[in-house]
Image (cartoon, rainbow, N blue to C red; front, side):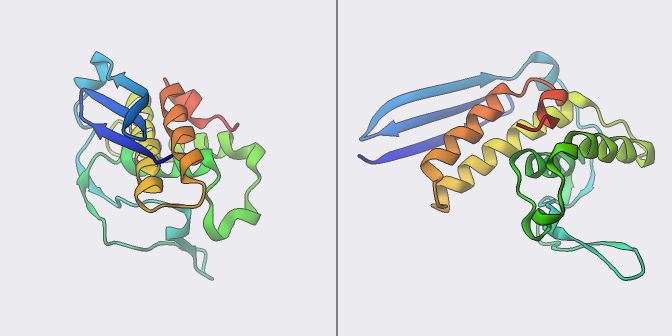
Length: 176
């Protein structure tokens, strides 16, 4: 039995369908809440666009360096923060995996967000970060499908279900 996952994302709604042998088996539609559809960009600036733990290196002098600039663009910086939150939430730490105390992740994410907010010259709201976190989870589900990752048939629906459960930033930072 052939199974496909179709994802369509617009500012107004996200649709995810599981199709087996040409028949829709499951359909999930998430309509954006009005405060999110009307949410202006917090501050459009240069963003990394592919922010993950493996993009950082700590130099011998203690300077934290950021790598992989091929997806830089202008956009909402909440997108970069959401990339890191999603990686932490689903346990994708790349080469840092052995160094991470998973029980401390919610606190670590809060420290990251608080530090960012203290240094940013603009407001980064929880609603924007939660929205981008859901979008990043759906993007990971989509990429899992198109790249035919191991276990993609199980992983993609799990990521979409997680995105559907995230209604606020507190839920996004929880560790399961």
